[in-house]
Image 1: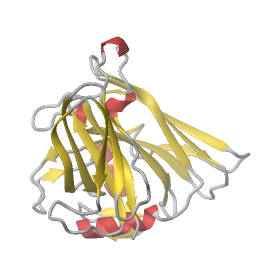
Image 2: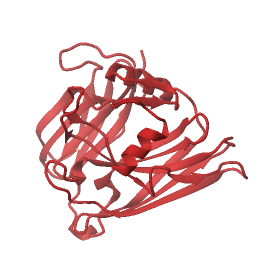
Image 3: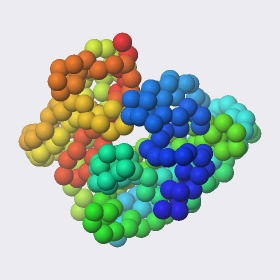
Length: 275
């Protein structure tokens, strides 16, 4: 709770839900979220972020290393943030929304992040670390690893509060220290072409037959299209999205996520529709 309140006061914002894109552009509706995020994603950057680590489901121990790299100087004061989020969280919000995606759970080392600089010899890297045990919690507020993500981002901290780059990985994708006991999880490949218009192919690989759901969601987590929901045989599969929602209506240009949910967890890939 302290990190949540700290992040709210850091901007500050008078109420939630609210989005800050580029540290300044504010939106209070889900339609506004999409516009603000797409405008930010269109901005070029030399910065890249790599996330590595491990997840042990037996002990619930999580180890994270986030490495930010750039080939050019970034003037200003920056911090590298490591954040734990959880999706499909039920909470009766005052705005009438009960199910929440990418809910802020915790920040490491805290909501201030790890101070970093990018002003020396290039290429230059900066690294932040996190080590924690995923809390169990009490229903309906338990921490469910299959719905948790690790989100890392570099943000200016003193003036513009501009986010230069971000990356995300599903908690369960970090790996299992008991490797020999871990089943081979289904894999979601990167769609091609990407960007695309009007159709794109999404590869899915299953080592064993099982039930999976492949859906298209927008950047707010709202499900737009279900491409498959049910049994799927072992092997390589290619599912096609035609840029339409479940009602057959075409969606607009922007950034979307292909989201694969299976018994072992969940993973996502970013899709860019350009009309």
